[in-house]
Length: 622
Image (cartoon, rainbow, N blue to C red; front, side):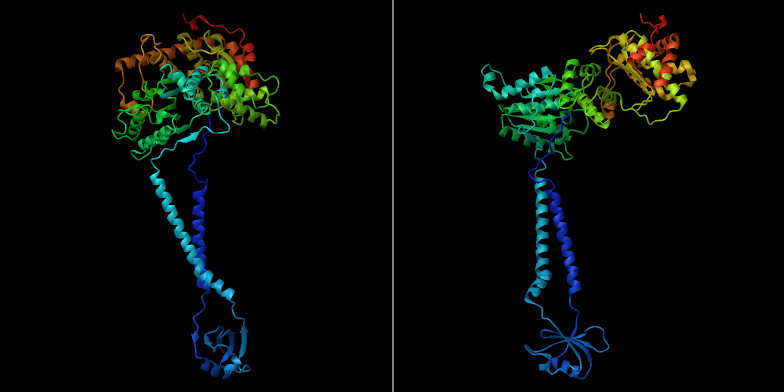
């Protein structure tokens, strides 16, 4: 829900990469200089005495002599390149030596200056030495840096917060009044400890934030950091766990050592279930790295050392898998439940997220809050962002009600896939299927209200019949669940009634899966079976290995009864849906025709088409 700032290690971003680039460039330059030096080496010329050179020159054996200072570079006749060299006495000329310029061509070449000599020496001698020295220095620094990384492997990677410009406060968070009250008391304890100490109150050692994903646990922790005015260390539970045994425990020790030096302060561990899972599961053996890390956390939070003003905040959406020793008072004294927002809270959340966005007149956020039952704060934030994106795509200067509605439907049931082409037969079958859902849901007394019916593919479905409860519900009855089961099977039964039992299609695959899951949950988790009423049978959730290793808590005979109960619920739901559709074939055809004409039918049009639909006696529950 929030974006964490990047981890800082005190070095410039990209410094490591820049160092590697410099070393590579130095190595390439050194190789280039070696190649140039090899090509610039003078050819090996045979040296002869000056007396012989003078004699042969006057005898006409040479075609050219190049004079470069005191050096003579000689090219014999019949040769293309110079092959001989000789040296005159200091200060002498070719005329002084007695060479007849009529017998050989003499070319004078300007002497190399001191500057060019120094440059040549520098390029061929000094610069390579400097480059080699620089390369060795860079390699030593790199090795030293890797050694420092190895030494800091067991150090904590927690980030320190509290001085950011864009602080999050409790006023920035809508709803969650009870959770904010508990956390405000923690902040107040840190600010005014004497107020509580005078009454004998002790600072809570730990506060566990528990709630579904997207409800704002991390955002509340950020608000505590913004309000507390004390050092706030943040780290993820997964950052403790490494492939090397003992690293996690070492990081825990280092984290709490830093916190104690900065006390009073707060440590926030996000997703603590990554390291705080129940011990003794048999996974990983007695030296499991995760268990060693958890043991160190337990000792640091409530071990032999006492009296440290360090509060541990932790967040998880899987409190059921945490170790009991971690949850006991003295470690986590408070457990703050953060639930999905109700309607007033959803409206407040939407108002916050739409506050800085230009809204057109007539945009009804209250109706959006009413339709989004079961949505988390993250879902609502996504809807607000999608509304702005859709408005920009449509070249609107303000966000209209149509933009908000489209964003809501995109987030809730997926985007429309208008590019998917269906032939007329598939369109008709989809229209019957969705009309079957709508009629069964409309007629049954404990079902929700039809919100929209469409045969345009959305997400992974070929069409959607959307039901929305008129108000938020905390509890559901057996009658409600049975109506929902019949509604789920309405599409498959409509296909059966119109095309025959052997002509049903795979379009109902998702409906059947959800119906089976709901029926089994009614029997095993809610005690709503007929023969097994008020009995609950625990089914281990989690990864496959954990499910295999835990023994089932009921016998094979009971498992057979559970299967029979689930089958009975599904059969009853199918029979009820079949009775409703056969009793309302006129409305089924009318809604099918409407869908083929418009592709999408909203709530008002659906109610008009379904007017006169009734509940037959054989579909009623007594």
